[in-house]
Structures are given as structure tokens and as C-alpha cells.
Image 1 (cartoon, one colour):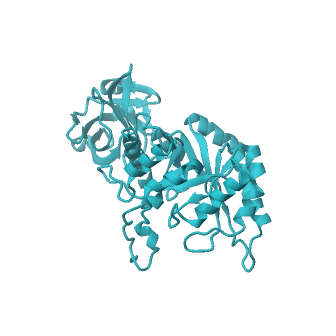
Image 2 (cartoon, helix red, strand yellow; image 1 turned 120 degrees about the vertical axis):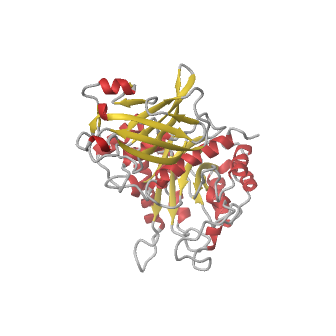
Image 3 (cartoon, helix red, strand yellow; image 1 turned 60 degrees about the vertical axis):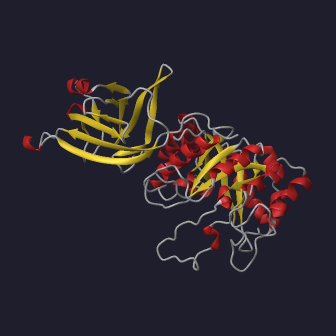
Length: 430
């Protein structure tokens, strides 16, 4: 499993419970050297968390290979190692643990380097990092998941499948959402070995598959339109693969014909030709309501019309919370308000509009762009959104979909912040 670049890892920052009582907190630290070394060369780690905790270098406990040691026990050890590829788990005894939120962790890590003159020892590494504490508690009536799309700037470069799933589980989420063509090796025909690995990793991290993202590429061939039969074949290919991988929902992103995302007219027949297969597989097909399309729109009316006309239980609506964005996304370098799509300033759909379509909503992608150190979302008004979902009786998944700045590893911490934020709000809803 791959590690984050920072010495202080965001994955692994949590309170520690023993015998039903919170006794401290722990975090993971990457080896700062270019090689692994014997753990007896550790000279301690001083830890400060804001103005809450400040402990000297000999207080924290160290865990390697599943065994926990005091600093003195490490000094007396023989054969215990801190490998370059593994993070050390550092546990700080602190009765009651840390409060939920983002904390600035500062460390002073000391290592004895035998090949460096004594007068320059120990080698000291002083770093700090703002990290969200892993979410605790149920977080109201909802289930929580993460879309691996959140990590797409990192996926395949600094994250692999297992590291991504470990990061999902670390948020306290139970569900994982993928993109078929983004995460399935050798799509659309993964090997049996890859499928076995997929289920082994789900079991290892106690995750269930939720929503599978697919595409009906209506502009597949230049110069001619895709037929409804071809559209159905594309959808059914992904339904079968999603079924093989255990997914309950399939989101087809259908080619559009207008700037407000009106889908290609073949969508109706393509979906209707696929409803029997979806029923057989126990999958709900759910196109997304995505900005700049609001809830009160002919596209949504047409989707609901198909449900009411056919009586199907295998077609529903997926809400992308980006439609509730009410503040602009900051301009990127070279952008102006005139040169980018207007909907990036937010279309500000009223969350109360959910009440009119709630019975058809089967999945929610919790789209967001930036959550600051104070756990404040800079674009999405979560309290009214979550209150409206609860009032409408929705108890399904909120699946994090980070679409902000793609600086390496930033997405991991941003998803953690979102889970801390929305769980905290959800737990306090009326």
C-alpha cells in the first residue's frame, strides 16, 4: 500500500478506544530517511496538537507489525524495524481523546544516524500538518460512502486501488463508488484474478459496492448518430460488469444535445431495452441530475415520466449536490468569468425542491470542492441540503465526490473533512 508524501499521514489519524473509553489518539508517520532502519534508532517523537496537547519525546507509544512498544522497549529491542514502505503508528495517551474537527499536528521526530558524527546527532525532523480527525458516530439517518472519482488526480500516480480503498474505509465510510472505465483493470473484461482481488479488498476494508459509473458515448463514431440499439448494448455491457462486481446502482452518463444537459433522444429506448436485465441483476439505473440542470426541469420530468409509465423499480434519480452550490468556485489560472461555464458560479437550486422528487431519488453524490481548516464548505450549503434530504425521508448513501484542486494527496484530506463536516451536521438535524 502506498504512502502519502507528507511525513504525517492523514489516513490513520483517529481517537483510540480501549474498554469502551477513549484513552488517546494516534496517527501514522512515514519514515523520513531514504532507507528503513532498526526501530531502536528512534530517539523519540515530541507531539503537539494546537493548544490541546503538548508531550515530550518519550511519551508516545510506537506500533510496528501489530505490536506496540514504549520508547524504552524500542531501545531494548532487537529485530524490530521501521521499513521504508510502512508508516509507524504513533499513539499519544490522552484521556478523552481529541474533539472532532481539523487539528494542526506538529511533531519533532528524532532519529540516531550512526554514520553521521555524534556532534550532529540526533537528526531532528520538525513538521506540522492540518488533518481532520476520522469521523466518529453514525451521523444521523444516512449511510456514507466515497466515490473513487474523488481521487482521480492521484489514482494511478500516487494511489493504487488498495490505497484508495483504505482511504475510503479510514473516513468511516461503508460504501465505495467507482467509474467502470476508470478503475476496472482491462475494462470491460477484467481477469478473474482482478475480480477476486476486488472482492478480497472489499472484505479487507469492510466496504460494499454502491454506484458504478458508466457512459453511453453517443458521439462514438464521427459522422453518424448512435442508435438506441447501440446505446442499449453499451448500457447492458456495464450492467453485466457492475453485477459481476456487486454494485446496486449504475449511473449511465448519456451523451447530451444542449448546454443544459438534455440527453440524446435515444436514452429512453436504450434504458427501456435494458430494464429487464437490470431487474434480473437487482440493479437500479440512475442518471444524475447534475449542474447546470436544476430539479425543476424537463429532463427530470422525462425521467420521472419513464418511471411512472413503466412502473419500473429499476430506474431512479441520482442527485449530484453540485446543483445546490450557491457560491462560485475560485477562478483557475488563466480563467475569467467570461471564459468558463457560468454554472461554475453555482446555480443555487433550493434544497426544498427535493421534496417534489424524493420518492424517485435512490442515490446522492455528495459533490464538493473545498472545505477549509474550520470545516466550512466554501460552495455547498450542507445544513439545508441535509435537512431537506432527511425531511424527504432519504436514508441512503451520501457518496463523497471531491472535484476541487487536484494537488497530489489533497483529495484524501478533503474527503476526510467532508465526512467530519456532514456527519456532524447530520447528527444534529431536527
